[in-house]
Amino acid sequence: MRALHPKRPSLLDALVAKGFRATSQRKVLLETIQTAEGRLNAANLLHLARQRDPHVDRATVYRTLDLLKRLRLVDELDLMHPSGEKHHYEMRGARDHVHLACFSCGAIKEFVSPFIDRLKRQIARQNGFDIRVIRLEIGGRCRDCRAAASKRGGDPEQSAK
Amino acid sequence: MRALHPKRPSLLDALVAKGFRATSQRKVLLETIQTAEGRLNAANLLHLARQRDPHVDRATVYRTLDLLKRLRLVDELDLMHPSGEKHHYEMRGARDHVHLACFSCGAIKEFVSPFIDRLKRQIARQNGFDIRVIRLEIGGRCRDCRAAASKRGGDPEQSAK
DNA sequence: TTAAATGCAAATCGTTTGCATCTGT
DNA sequence: ACAGATGCAAACGATTTGCATTTAA
Image (cartoon, rainbow over all chains, first blue to last red; front, side, top):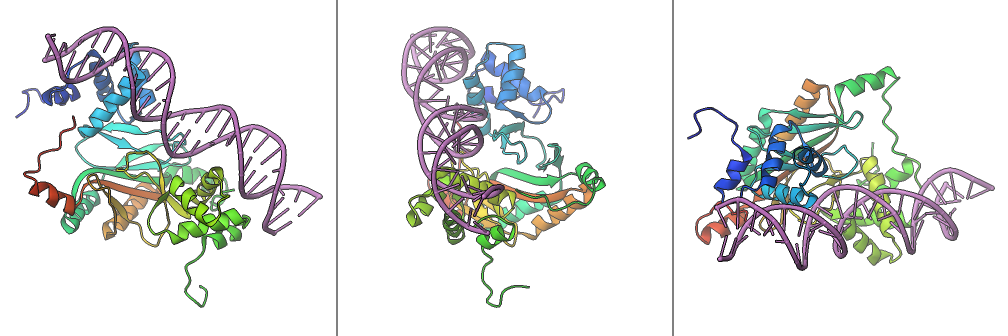
């Protein structure tokens, strides 16, 4: 039961369908989220949204993200690498994925695997757990950074001092 | 290659072995972490440590946690349920596990599965990624809370309003 | 018309930092 | 002796909140 043109379901429609108001700020924010590929944090979102409408307020950004999160239209991430401890958000897509965060270059890669679904089913079955949100974060060194490091000589257990 | 008495390897020994000083504050903090089963956040840790030595300072707690994290002696978690957005820490144990956080009762359960290791191996192989830290968080409803909810009639998609 | 949503500014909260002092080694 | 570690208090940055005002339905 979808529109004729297989258009990406709009976040705004989802909100309206649930009885929330279609305010101009929400339109701007939701479009920004949908347009941006990848992840956004609150500051990014505010910045981008203001390019469309300079009047969007920080508080509205947070309130909107919170709403989307509660409606499970976006997922909240706590990526391991970026030192500043802010949350990131991404539209909830079709398939679950792992985020691979490289500690060296900071790149984030999404990785899809059938094991994710197997793990979820196992958890649901063995624990009677109703899974609502799943967050898989892995930190380490990506292939490129490993190569670069070994070129510079060895790959000594990084000192923590 | 272990001690004769199969004693749990001490965090303090690990620090000393790496050349860090065995200060009295560290002794208290590390023992507290090792004694506590489960997870701690900085505030918990401070509180518990002060029961042993009232002079431990908040800054020292954070500095110590940061050190342990960098040495990968503890894992930092960002549990999905507890609303206050603080990090939690746990000793790095033998096997990786998923944290199942119940949104209703707040309970956190650890779940071990062979799929975790399979997923890790797949990631390492297919991406040439050197995995240092893994964080698996799942949020939802635990068996008990589901049962309690359905007893109260239905299990309506929780409204986000 | 009126409940919901927003803007603004102040407040909150976890965490970090500068700097003087102390303490393992 | 001296680099490393701590305590203290102030600073910080992300997020949240109270309240008066605006706006979608």
